[in-house]
Length: 318
Image 1 (cartoon, rainbow, N blue to C red):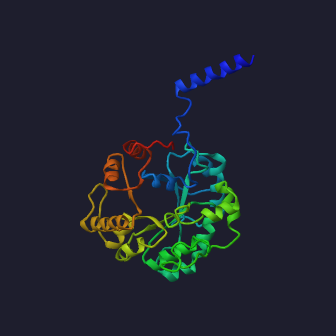
Image 2: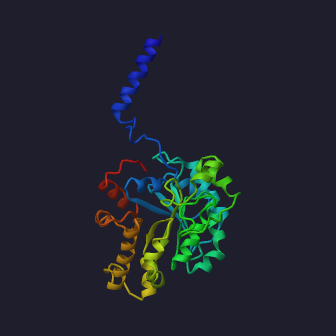
Image 3: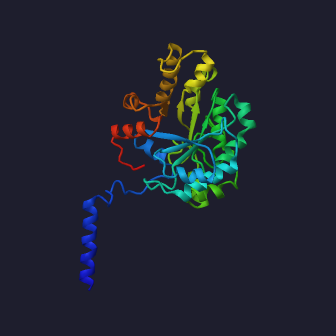
């Protein structure tokens, strides 16, 4: 009986492997990180995102998204931390992702802009509350000064993480208490959360991804210094707001004006110099050229993402 049982199991496995039902060892490989976006960037793979803003049901719906991360919008939408907490729980309950990650990465924009250091210090509590929901990063809008960016990094850190402290950064501002819910969302114990809830690549083991929108003429003046702040993981140039700020008109379908093109190039060059990822909009007809240029984060929908993944021979499922 045992012999026949073993034979049946082996026959079934052979059939499944031949039909492609059993994933390859690479596809079935367990995630190495909590933050899928960071894991891919570490592998040199571009990442792609979609938008979100809602509660539990939207979280469940987006748990199987084609995107590598979700940009949760609170810059112009309501600042509703309760809805965000429910959204994160919905992602967990609807997951895991096809890549095996507990959730897609979630990066939030905030209603406070990085206008100056004083503004960020007065509103650092927003960073703490948002990170306590279990999100994986923050994208700071209108990041105008290095001082404001340093406060963002400080607000995202616990005081016992010391990389960069004393030279360019002050010690972290996050306090004990917020790690309970966040650690449950990440699927780790509280001690483990405290260990890895730190900005990458400043902390090579960190699972939090911080980004900047260098999206107006004031921010552009300080682009190099702001993007060089330790703890920044990516940046973008915010073409719509940059156009408003520079008063550089561009009608739909037209090429970028010289002023806008120069602004993009300056932010892109600053990212290259700092060794952080550059974010830019991509389309199905531009994504391969953008990747070849060096763009590492793209928005533009599923078709563009799938074409980009094929171009870079992405093997991780999404």
